[in-house]
Amino acid sequence: MRIRRLPETVINRIAAGEVVERPASAVKELVENSLDAGAGRIDIVLGDGGRTLIAVTDDGCGMSGEDLTLAVERHATSKLPDDDLGQIATLGFRGEALPSIGAVARLTATSRPAGTPSAWAIAVEGGTVTLPRPAAHPRGTRVEVRDLFFATPARLKFLKSRQTEVSHIIDVVQRLAMARPSAAFSLIEEGRSLLSLAAVAGGGDAQAARRGRLAAILGRDFGTHSVTVDAEREGMRLSGRAGLPTLHRRTSAQQFLFVNGRPVRDRLLHGAVRGAYHDLIAHDRHPLVALFLDLPPELVDVNVHPMKTEVRFRDAALVRGLIVGALKNALAQAGHRATAPAAMWARTFGAGGSGGGLRPSPGSALPLTSGAAAGMDSGGAPGLAETPAAPDLGPLPVGACIEEAPAQASDATVPPLGFAQAQLHATYIVAQTGDGVVIVDQHAAHERIVHERLSQALRSGAVARQALLLPQVIELDGPAAARIVSRAGELAELGLVVEGFGGAAVVVREVPALLGAADTEALLRDLAEDFAQLDEALALRERLSAICATMACHGSVRAGRKLSIEEMNALLRAMEATAHSGQCSHGRPTWVELKRADIEKLFGRS
Ligand code: ADP
Ligand code: MG
Image (cartoon, rainbow, N blue to C red):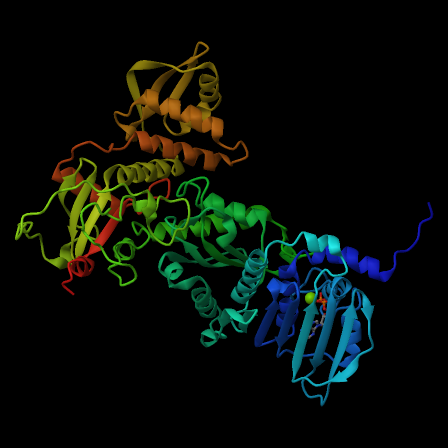
C-alpha cells in the first residue's frame, strides 16, 4: 500500500470528528470565538435543535476580508501571539473550529471590523471555500451554520432527539454565560426564547458580577440554598457558591466548574467536590456547585483535549486540597442551616401562593411525609406521590381550643431551634422558636452530632476509647470477619479495637467512648458491609469518614426512644453548636421549621 497525504477536506473532517460532536459543540466553538473577540452581546438562533441552523451573531472586534480567508483555514489563529501554549488567555487557540465546522456543514461567516466601512462574507460548504465577497453587516461577526453533518451522514445518525440536542446547547451556553457575566446572551430555537441574559457589570467587582450571573441562571433558590466559597492558597483562588448538602441531584450535571474562566468537565475537580461532600450526602447523589478556580496559566495545561473541556494541573494534589478544604470550610459555616425548611413548608403546603393549599378534606393525604422532599431537589427523594393516605381522624370537635404552651423567655433570648415542647411518636421533637415551630428528627439530628464529634476527635487524633470489661466475641461470617480484621488499623484510629477470633468471629476489646451503649454486634455487621462496598480507591480519610457515619448511626438515639424535655433541649442546643447539623449523614434534613406566618396562612389568618 502506498502512503499518501490526505486531502485537506478529509483532514478537516477527521478533526471535525473530535471537535464537533453534536450541535452543542459547534455552538460552543462559535460562542467561544465571539467571547474571544470581546463581544458584549451574543445572539444565538437555532433551527431544529441546531441541525438545520446555528447562527451566532456578536458585536465583537470583527474580521477583515483577508482575515476571513485565514479564519476558515486550518491551524490559523489570532490567539497565540508568542506561540506559547503555556500562556493561554483565550478560550480558543487551536485554529480548528471554523475549518472543522466548514468541513461538515455549510458555513457562512460575515464580519466587519470596527472602523471599516464595509463587511465581508466567506462561505465554506463541505470543505469547499468560496472567495470572500463584500456584504452588508454592522460591526461584529455573524457565523451561520446550516445542515450540520450533511457531509458526514454517519455523524448525523448519532444525533439524539431535538429536545436532547437543545438541552445540550442550553447547557453549553449557560456555562459560557456563567464564565462571562459581562456579556449579554440570547438563545432562540424555532422562534422560542430559551435564554435571555442581560450583561452583569457588578459595579466593576468581578465576584459580584459572577454572583449576579449565577443568580440569573440558577435561580434564587440556589442562591438561598448555597453558601459562598472563597479561598486562596499558593497563588490559586477558588470562589463561587456551594449548594447546601440537602440540595442534591442524581447526576453531577449541575456542577459548574471553571478554570481560568473556561468551563471544564474535569474528573479531578468533580472528584474533589465529591470528596468534600463525602460524609454529608448519600453516595449516589451529587451536590450543586458553581466554582471558579483561578490560577497562573503556567500551572495548568488546557491543551489536553480537542474540545478543551479537560485540563491537567501541574500540582493536582494542591488543587484538590484547596477545593476540599474550601468547600468543607464554607459548608461548616452554614452550621445548622438546612435547605431553608420554612420555604419548603410553605411550598409543600402551597401557603407560599404557589400551590393549591392544604385541604383537610376526608381522605386527603397530608402533603408532607418526608423531610427529604426538601428544597428544590428533583428526582430520587420521596415526593408527594408516595405519601400514604392520612388516617381518618373523624370530625374535630368544633371550637376545640388548644391551650397555649407556657410562655418561654422573651423572643430575644430564644435560641434558633427554640425550646422543646413535646415529643411526638417518640421520634420527633417539637420546639417553639421565636417566630415559629421546629420539628426535629431526633435520630437524624443526634446521629449528625455524634458523627461530627467523632470526625472532630479523629481529626485531632484523640478518639476517646472505652475498654470493655469483658471483651465481646461476635460471630460474623468468614468474609465479613476477614474484611473487619483487614481494616482493624482504620477502626482502631476511630477507637474501635477488634481482633480476629477464629475464622468467622472477631473479638471487640475497646469501643469509642462517644458511642456509649451501642449495639456492637449490629455495628460490626454494618461496618463489614461498608467495607464490602467502599471503593478501595477512596482516600483513607474518606473511608474513615464513611465508617464514622456508620458508627454515628449506631451510637445515636433511636427513633422510638422517649426523651425528657431536658434531653430534648440538650439535643437542640447541641445541634446549634454543631457544624453540618442541618442534615444527617445521608443529606436528609434533620429538622424543619414552620414560621408563624406560614401557620397563619394555613388557617387563612393572613
Ligand atoms: P481559534 O478560535 O482556535 O483561533 P477558530 O477556527 O475558532 O480558531 O477561529 C479562527 C480565527 O478566526 C480566530 O483566531 C479569530 O481570529 C477569528 N474569528 C473566529 N470567529 C470570530 C469572531 N466571532 N469574531 C472575530 N474573530 C473571529
Ligand atoms: Mg475558536
